[in-house]
Image 1: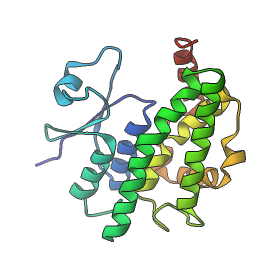
Image 2 (image 1 turned 135 degrees about the vertical axis):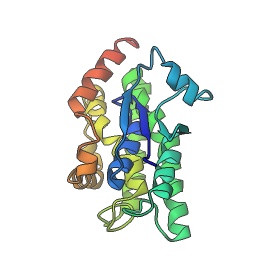
Image 3 (image 1 turned 180 degrees about the horizontal axis):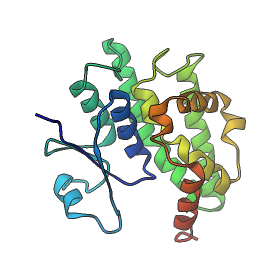
Length: 217
């Protein structure tokens, strides 16, 4: 039976980018269904009735929700090529820990940069830099977070890089000046076709965020 794979997503979502990259790494063909998050589709509400959020992977009619869970599902189901999670149980636990750290920390801190002003915006900038510095320590001198191979933790973070330009433009600061190792890692990841083809133009993301920012001004 042919696999039926659909992805419900919204183009600037760094969480949706994770799923696109994982599917590309595995060579899985899928139907992409762009979602309007201000007018959620019946299909999205049916497939993710609990959170009503993207991304949602629909595999043979069954929904899988939450980006990090989706990536792990993809890795387990299409396990014949390009393993994404480490084979060692301890290394696997660490990769999961740091993706969970990213999920709990970066998005909310970075949101202050484009929704707040003054001291709150400054706090958001400082928090983002602090988080990225912590991740630089995890990266160390390795090519990728998992070592020589691009994997789960890399996928967990790389989508945020398409928002860096917007954070810097709106917040008037330089991530590269503060976290050069992270930017070198981003450029390394972008050499991979699976990443380059899955991430949107950072300037387009910035334009979208500037429009969103007007609502908070």
